[in-house]
Image (tube, rainbow, N blue to C red; front, side):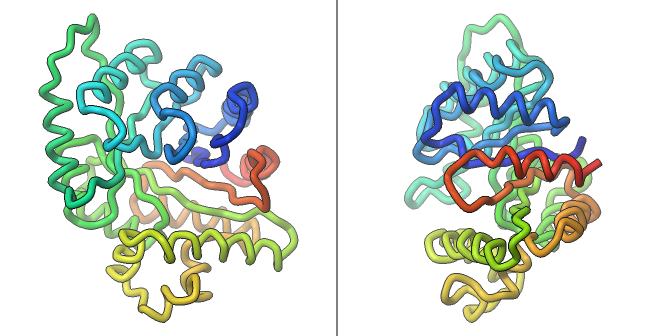
Length: 277
């Protein structure tokens, strides 16, 4: 399946509940389980726990923050997981260092490649970079295996594919709401968009590159912006949006099912599994 699950819902949950949720994702037939690193568990440790709890599922960090661990530690952890679980771990890297910009990530990747490790295997995981703008997308294509994009409409996917060329791997995140109450669904979608346009400068910069105006970014986001970022009005819109990313050049779409509460959205994942091939 070219569709995976993306979630922030593991933060604050007991590890038993998280591991059970991972097994549910696997049983539903999704290709990959992506999770973010924000204020929860250390990403590489959690990846190991999820890989151990499942048998075929690919586990991806989306993303592990490069400011939180040395380059050598990231390289060693990635190789360890790739050796223990061949073909099942994707190391997504990203984040920000004050004043670092793209050069900080390039230096980090150089240090990963140069790490002097005494390891028994040369296995390495697929390495993806969190990338939005042209500079980071080109870096993802040349010094990694590709890019993981987040909070983007399909037109960004088309632009990213053009920038990176045909061979780099491209995994695009897509937020969806599968709530049958249209008013609640729209509120959930708007709250999700508002959180990013108010706080994430790099997301606003990327949206401006795509042609969204200051009016679109004001007051938590215009209707046009909410509709572009979140598929929420019908199940058909959800499937059409996933297909639009794939048609635009994505190799994989990681779907973030938004819900009205802190619970792990297992019911939404089950509904999504009935909509995608």
